[in-house]
Image (tube, rainbow, N blue to C red; front, side, top):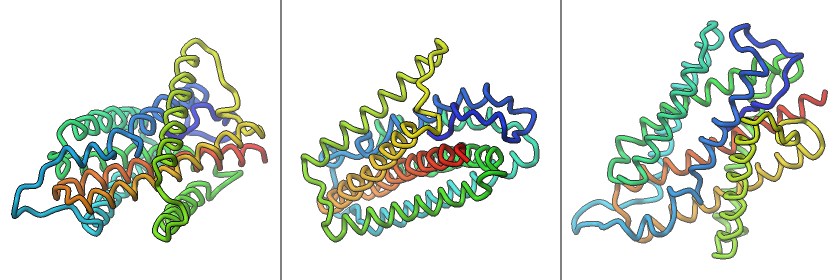
Length: 285
């Protein structure tokens, strides 16, 4: 999820309570936790999810508009808790324990939703708040670390993320990119490969073995991040397709919250990978 555990920001100013190499080394675990477990290849959205839900006669069903409304609500939850963590960081508080707690809590909530999808109207907002705590902390740390060489790195990442989401939506809506079975298979395999690779990097890090290009601003490192960003963006096509299918099949109303949650996970992953990419590029200056 994000951060570069692996950034080597020795030359950047970080508050004294964050001892750099040690702090940044802990971040790949969070990066993996946030992105690898969920995605649209994630257990969250797939056809079996919608096929396994039953709608009783006379009850409301899932709609695309309803899912979009729920997503914006979750997005506000993320922004609210992210702003809180951001302010706490700049007030001199040690937000790392908060980030760890939020990452673990988000993981638990997400798994609970995977098994009890009918709880999504209650659990999805909780996940949004937890995710915001984590994202706000990561963003504040990057913003502080690169304030001299890239003072607008967080805003750039936000704008690029919004641009990518809009572009993917238009490509999907106008059928320029179609979510064929072959396309889905390729993206899911690529996503799983990235998740496994991140997990391998975490395990190797425990034995003081570093895969340098993951975190360094070398040419190969930047190319790697570009590939990951592309895969994350293409996962949005799968999300849009599955939400559309769920609405078409008349999935239960609570699946709007579930679909919004899954879309949020992908967008947050995309943002964190873009933030990492910008950090790599900035580190070359």
